[in-house]
Amino acid sequence: MTSIPEKGLFISRSLACLFAVSMLFLILSSMILFQFGDTSLVPRSIYKLIIVKRTPDYIKPDETRASFEHKSSRFLASSHKESGSTKYPIKSAICGQTQALLKVFMYDLPPEFHFGLLGWKRDRNQIWPNVSILNQIPAYPGGLYLQHSVEYWLTVDLLSSVPPNVSRPCTAILIQNSTEADVIFVPFFSSLSYNRHSKIHGNKKPTMDKILQVKLVEYLKGRDEWKRSGGKDHIIIAHHPNSMLLARKHLGSAMFVLADFGRYSSQIANIDKDIIAPYKHVVRRLVARDSPSFDERPVLVYFQGAIYRKDGGVIRRKLYLLLKDEKDVHFTYGSVSSGGVRKASQGMSSSKFCLNIAGDTPSSNRLFDAIASHCVPVIISDDIELPFEDVLDYSQFAISVRASDAVKKGYLLKVLRRVKREKWTQMWERLKEVANYFEYQYPSQSGDAVDMIWQAVHRKVSFVHNRVRRKNRYEMSQKFLDAI
Image (cartoon, rainbow, N blue to C red):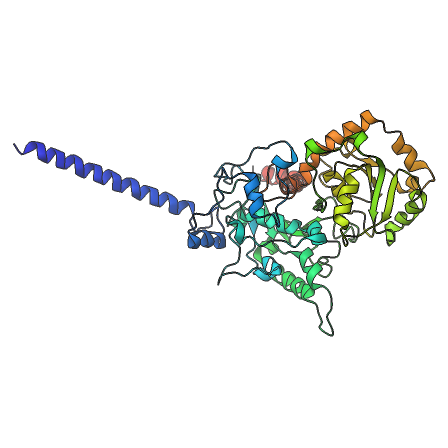
């Protein structure tokens, strides 16, 4: 009579034990995923941030791009949906070391080197903002500050590789163990530091910018990571031509991310080890489907900006004298004040060709403003290095003219007038396709500027590793033979 209840009791206890064991395994697996050990995928400071916050407010995978931009319009770039560009695949919720192209270790530098420069108010002992909550990401200042904001977008993108619900490409991810990293990232907002803290006020010397550079050099030279490689596997962003003026000579072995090489010696910066990154455009990006066509652009050639420049920029004055009186040419002085950006947006989108002329340095933001406006760029800068040129054929969407030819009377206009509607339209169509490669945005998308920079880093790292292997092949072979 009692055998049936006992059997039921046995089954109930067995199910309870099975449930308890299952929960134990679930808890253990979660702890392993976020462990503090050397092999953890999550940097220590980011782990603490996520665990302490315990927030449910992650970016939802199905959140529309329109609402995303509405919530953070101060610093987000135009979306793929708005631009009419190709939609690219995004990463799954889990992006591990085996899936990512680059494993990146990032120093936990104090906020005074990065988000503190944006006036970020942090909690006690907090190093990084929670990038999974939009209103907790400090906004970058607008205007001309934006054009050199590369450091900001790359840092925010790396941080976003940790929260599982931020959809982004699986190109570069943060790891905690520096010995397993492909590259070491230095999160110093050097361009912002220069723009905001390089001017001397009264008798106060040195400037805050110089103080930060001195601190950075001391910090890096004292790190085991720097000593292991002599800094060769470190990434330092110095996009503003005048940023890192004091520190660059001490850190020249690192991989720099620059706008150009105009103010660097070849011993400190060169195309073999460093990366050229695009400026962030400041004009409004055109929606591809609304981009004016050949006949809807009445102006043949457009340029608006500073005309009197130093060094290679003297060509601007010469071209101004040659072109200023041509009826279908707009060549005038302009600045960002008094609605200058709005006027430039209107002018470029109404023009067939936009001049990108060397200024104080070989590069300028106008190239990327022209691309965003789908205005065929005319590059007149003999010493310019172009972003991603190892994978992009600029001749498909831009025209390059030697400075010595451009200043010949009648030469430039003759060349441009020979470009017929069909050829121009081909370049215009290609411009609409490549515009996304030069777009900074958060979260990043496959094939945008952030993703393209990480891919460029990967190619550079692979090139260096292959060069080392080639250099050591005979030495390693001899060691093998000696061991036989």
